[in-house]
Amino acid sequence: MFKDFNLDTHYLIMDLIPGILKERLSSSEIEKLSKLQNHQLVNFLNSVVGLCDPESVYIVEGTRKDLEYVKRKAIETGEEIRLKNENHTIHFDPPLDQARAREDTFILGSKIPYVNTKSREEGLQEVISILKGSMKGREMFVGFYSLGPIASKYKMLAVQVTDSPYVIHSENMLYRNAFREFTNNEDFLKFVHSKGSLDIKKRRIMIDLEGVVYSVNTTYAGNSVGLKKLALRLTLNKAVNEGWLSEHMAIIGLEGERTHYITASFPSGSGKTSTSMLGKLISDDLAFIRNVNGIARAWNPESGVFGIIHGVNPKDDPIVWDVLHSNDEVIFSNVLLLPDGTVYWEGSGDHEPEKGVNFAGEWWKGKRDGSGKPIPPSHPNARFTVRLNSFKNLDLKYEDPEGVEIEGIIFGVKDYYTLVPIAESFSWEHGVITMGASMESSRTSAVIGKSDEMEFNPMALLDFISVSLGKYLDNYLSFGKRLSKLPKIFSANYFLKNENGYLNSKEDKKVWLRWIVERIEGKASAIRTPIGFIPTYDDLSSLFYKVLSKTYKKEEYEAQFTIRLKAYKEKFERVRSVYAGIDDVPDTVIEIFNKQISDLNEYINRFGEKVSPFQLS
Ligand code: SPV
Ligand code: MN
Image (cartoon, rainbow, N blue to C red):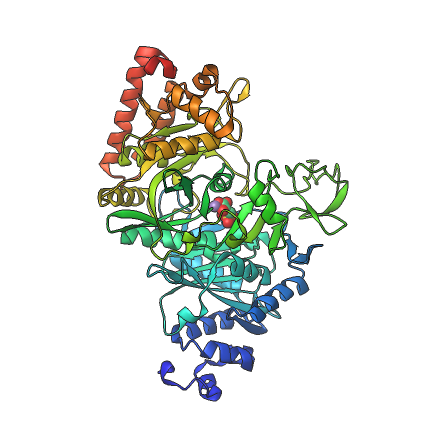
């Protein structure tokens, strides 16, 4: 067997590496690969090389030399451009490849409602025919990573193959290197990516739940960086089958009598990253949550941040701003490159420049596209890629092999019309169903297509769900039943409006987080409403003063916390009809909606379309 060979004897190992792979590896790369004695890995790489036909293969063991090599290649190939600060680069994705490609992404297997699926045979055939010869003349990179702390027994290994040094550079920043862990270990997820010819018509992302994802003709990281959102589809499926949760959530530590950790699920572009910066940072995007001795414990599968840059400014986002202006490594994507080698993005507070280069080429003020629409200097989904250890609020517990205990979960949306800024559920079931599974949010620019329409987005997972919603919710409900200590569940909405505009300022979220801490510690009281518990005026007025040195007026409170009964009821009716149309949804889900709607009806009969919190206290 492979593992029985003496590592020092190169030639024997070379004999073991199948033909085509061996031809493309230099002796130094053979030496690296040989250290792992991993038969399955070698076979996998051989088949990818056979299919994609790269000129050479580079093994990223993770040494400083490897990391430097990848960065140099990213610049030599033009995938990244070095900026004035030599640790910073900029990357552009093609104009039609600026966000997640929902329409081109498929879960392979049988049909699932609300999930884009394709038969396994058809999907594999299609993507394999596109991948054929796609790496001709290029170098192929192989990266080895762990989802989760290396020391954790729950970690998952993943290998990325790509012909894009930008993709592997991003992964080197966003994930923990786990090269050594692949020694004799045949249990790992596999990601195959090729830029191909960047023909958008042939962009495909095929997710084979057996543990392999293929992605081609795209470079936007949400479509190409396998360990991020492509892996989420695999880990979510695995979690549902194994009884844990793989979620689109930040993990944040909030200071109180001690640090209380919460997770927060928000669709892209509705406040997740900014919320994570208000506490001790463990994760800004993804969370694995497991039941460890009856306690819900969470950790971050990632070790970096791929965040939205639009609107990041020194006043509202001082921590992110500092990271982006430090000497740490940063990859900017799809912002405006200025003639002096610095960058500009919208909402930074800086003056809009006259000219530069952006994702659509040369850019000047007033430039329009073919259809006469103004081209913005930076794309609304422009991003930054940085390492977690660049953040001054990073909590070192992010490397805890057992994760952190979770005491609260926020389900947040961008909703101008209905949801109060913050509310707490009556129970785990009530929160999971009426807050998480009922999420409707304004569509984000992180997905290709029209932005700003309300869309159903349960647990902010609409694009990432890889199993039936019925099975997914059933797992969520039973996960709660098995816990001996249940996290509290909250709904949040930073975007509520009335006829005069937004009802809250950006910094108000600090108060809502403080209220969550006080609820966890049993210090704040609450008013029972039909949709859950809301804060009292007295508590908030003292918290606004404590946290923001602000006087909080009764009128502000009333406008923000008036329960829009009719709008809530219509929302729950819409969502109930979605779930009623899915075969395997547990009966309890519909029962919870029925109860919720009948409670709202009762209040509507008593109070009308809306009820002021003062009428309820
Ligand atoms: C998101 O859109 O939720 C992101 C970026 O975190 S992406 O990788 O595109 O999913
Ligand atoms: Mn995300």
